[in-house]
Length: 351
Image 1 (cartoon, rainbow, N blue to C red):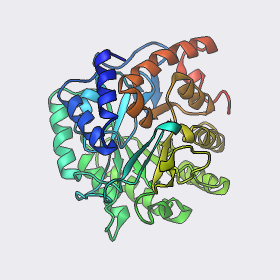
Image 2 (image 1 turned 180 degrees about the vertical axis):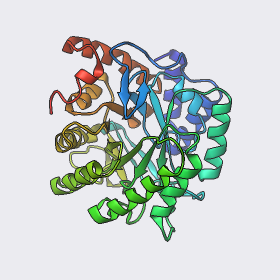
Image 3 (image 1 turned 45 degrees about the vertical axis):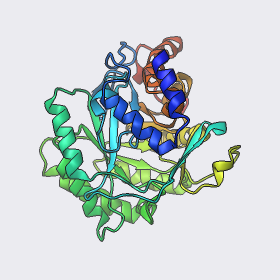
Image 4 (image 1 turned 90 degrees about the vertical axis):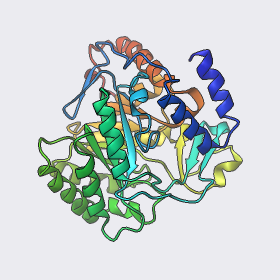
């Protein structure tokens, strides 16, 4: 981390968490972030659902909801980045305050509620970024408006509008901050939703990968249902996991806040879910591991549990965006210590 980034993090840490995040994005868009492009090394290069990644360390959805700084983020070291969640119409989300730092726990709680500028504004930004020469793998997290009468149609609509600009798309049914959204993880509802999205994809040109993002709070039987649905449909992969509603073992007084918990307390459970899904799918469906990653050792554990790539978010609030590149560089050393020639050889070793 540079001295400038360290000073910036200290200053932002004095502000309200959501305001600090917005200022950080504006600083990135203005060119004040780390640069140099994605970290590369022969052991780090990986193929994810047909996508060629220079390294497996990505930025999770939620960090740049509206594609406000996507070019700067991709220049900062990660192998890919995901924007969103994006809904058809703009929506303000839940009342503020709605983002809380749990410093003692290396965690955060958010109850944003899919606040975003809507698919038309995001489409314009992505188109401008691509026209300006922004390269790199960009994912789009699909969401539904809170007041929608047909949430399945919302997912399909955002997919169609942003299809020309994204490289992969994520069906997000696991946010705890939109009322009744997690009900879509039930088997029958999930099958209908995914069938509708995949049917819409079929009419949009060459197929791009569609992932499903799930919650960490599912029981074993629910995970088995999701794995069976995913294998039965032409789904391209899974993202495990979103935030949790659990609160065990937290030290911060802010643990009483409602919303989704992310960061270090989620590491163990999200890794368990990755391992379970890897076993349930026989290792035949790519998994992106998310939750609690703050070091190369964390990323390494997710990969050995069955993840083909990983994503960061909460740790960036404490360590800065340069953390993505540092994790990728350190991960190359861990893979070398494993005695593997490529990341793919490490995936699922502990599963």
